[in-house]
Length: 510
Image 1 (cartoon, rainbow, N blue to C red):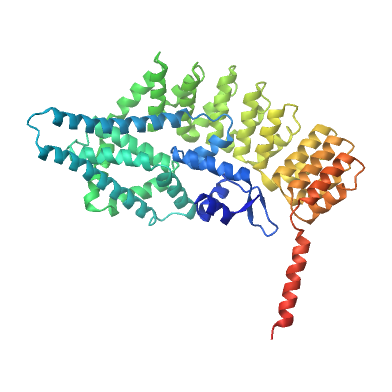
Image 2: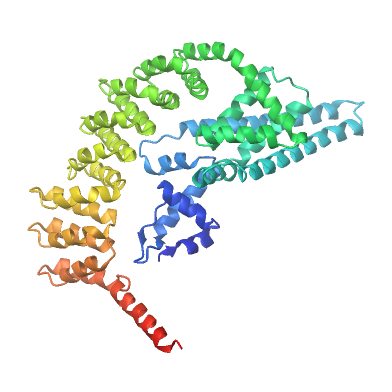
């Protein structure tokens, strides 16, 4: 059973606008469309949407969710580390309250006034946090942003990050109540966490972050403005000690304890300390621990396009694990400059590196990558073929012509794989070429072409399936008959009925 977009929205509680936003991002694309271009979502799409919602509750941003679901090499260590920090901070906050109450409990002179003040402090902070979060939500509606930027901000900051913001704001307002100065280490730690959370919830988009900062500066009510002032002053104070902190983190990249190295990579990436890029690259080339390599990769990606040239150099490294991390980082940076080198990596002797390079080229979607990927169609390795199919789907109509050309290739394996991908693309323009392939001299090609036609809509695809019901091969006839029996109503019949209704209306109109 397939669902239209309104039905899916009703079943999941999401808005139609959100589902369209997911489609535009490539996060949740409908399995097919009706002849009238309505989106149709399959049960598999519904399952994917449930996975998306589950990952959002963990605090992942939409780009992170896309990588988690689609990137076979994606590792969640960084996200888990962030959530561990959030939970630890929340636990520390609760433990602080418990300790204060125990102190009062153990003090013979403790009065109900002191106890009441402690409880009142907790309640007052909770009200301030709730008010600030509601104010922030209201301000997002007033920002001068594009529809996509605004939707992304709403999706990523308040739907998926309430717990994170609530915990941080609770600690900020508690620090204000306790008179902690903005220059203190505690305040600077809060400011650093604030920066990280803003970066995550705005998908590291500086335009959105700057717009939010201006809104907080000028439009937050006076009773809440102290929190923003506290964070701003702490950030300014933080800059003074940043150089020393970053230098210590660079040194810690060589520490014998892997946990210290992980922390150092996270700190350098969060600070985007570009002076550390050569050291990070050098360390990536010799780091023996997988989890440290993952965090080094994250830190390098945070440095932006400056990291591309040294990462390209690592593609020549003798260690396949290093080459894999380099390709992984390049796929995240998505710089067209890396297309040629990634094209070479597609033929890497290590299968995992080659598959990752194929995935990266698909994510780039650059025209220069298309010919490289098409040349790999029909590869004998099954996993590589599957990765290649998904990568070519990113090119949509641009992949149609070279794939149709491959249906005439001398190698049957390449013809069959090309037919499979054309079916996955779902473009009705492929129907004539696939219908012609029903007469191929190799059974696997004929079967792939027929299966692909079953994925297409339109009259030409229907005619191709009808033609297959007359084939001499009994197995293909049976498949074609089943496909024909389960196809939706013919567009031509629907058009005829609509025409009849129009004509009837004209006859009865006075």
